Amino acid sequence: MIFRYSIENFKSIHYCENINFKAHPLKRSIKPLKNNLLSTIAIFGPNGGGKSSVIYSLSWL
Image 1: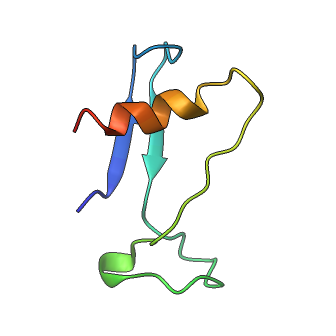
Image 2 (image 1 turned 180 degrees about the vertical axis):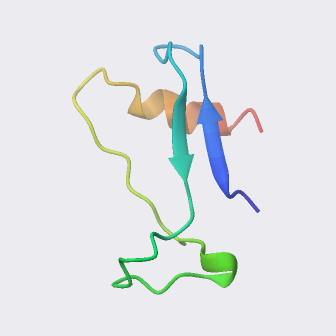
């Protein structure tokens, strides 16, 4: 199970970027899974911002 994902120096991502799958303790609008993990996250940003690179990097796991 993935709790946190970090990526650096992959395709268009040069600096360390982190994705945290733990639910924030103050926001309970989405029901978290076991260990307070989220079942869904969203990645958004401008064109050419590296969104697809993040998804592609997950295929290397």
